[in-house]
Image (cartoon, rainbow, N blue to C red; front, side, top):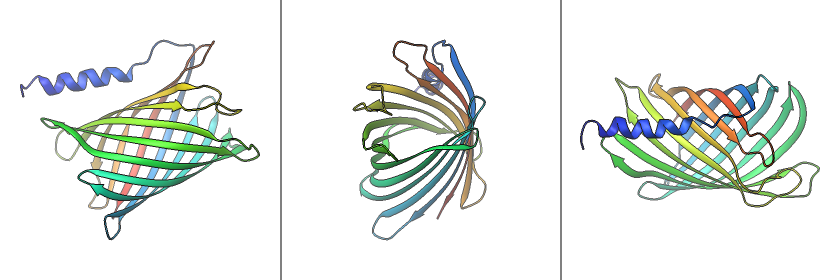
Length: 224
């Protein structure tokens, strides 16, 4: 592979971060703490806690995702999980959402020089307390990562949200939003790693101006 090929790949993927001009924009910060552990017989367990704040909504979301997975093939892991998702407006509780997740991870779709491409397909069923309706949502993601210098690693990812039905709280059918991100990560020790980056969340609004969230992301991951 020619030397200029890898930078060209990342330049093309980084272009995905840019979103079209729009009227409704918000600046946010998301913090994530993740604990992962390997279990016997190729099983894995993972718990992810996410805190979200924004200029427009203040502290607005606390999301806890518990997942149980099992490796079923070379680089393929299937997962089942549950999400507990209380939501707020400037720190005041507004509603509580529950989700059931089914997910398949593909750890190595392709390798292009030092660039490793991976993917994930996630299906979610969503419920909100006090509402007897179910929202179905599909969330495919593709990610490319490569080493930088020393122990630093660069990753670029794009995730799409497709609503498979509509109801009182999931009002848009089809493509609902895009999350495009770029991040740099590094290990702090043998167990804990840190990641920091930027994420753009583009929300599609029928018959109105789209939404754009500019998000500073920071995460800690402990793997056992």
